[in-house]
Length: 215
Image 1: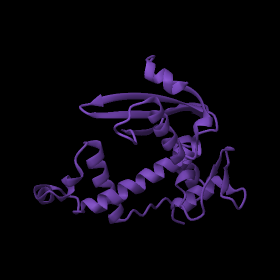
Image 2: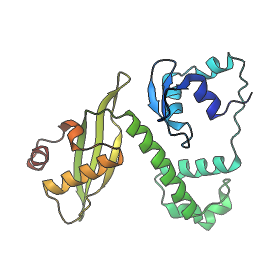
Image 3: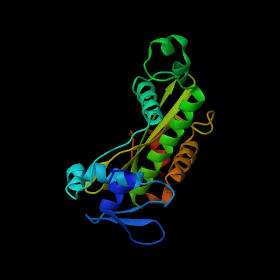
């Protein structure tokens, strides 16, 4: 029996209802869409059950991951570009193509999979954020551009989590008011299916703009 995502997920998780709620052997409950793969369940297994390979293999399951060449290629380019903070155009550079061992891809393909990975990460974070949590915010300007970073702050499975939710210029890049910042925070939280009413506290510098945002 080969060990694929479904095998690992269903070894630990059992379906609770038809609305996509699953429960792990350890008691953890998570939402997982039937047509959305098993990434939300697997993220818990890999983080909270570090001995999962031995546990699964002890049930006489043969570990035999089959990773396609396409998957290896996409992962390789994503790791290379993101970890080295390289421009997307790097993948189409002719010199890079001549000396890089990875099969070539286009900028369009790279962007496609960056968006897909982003959505997957957002879904995992959204499943973890409780109904009551805090945010940490910090803004800075570079030239004429003003940026805002937003982190969530909460406990998940007795561990403090501070995932980065957004780092971007404001929606209205000419309006730096407190209301404009609040609008950006509200827009960001909506991506994770949360709203301003879910915020219990704000961590920020003790300066007038942040006080106005909190008020």
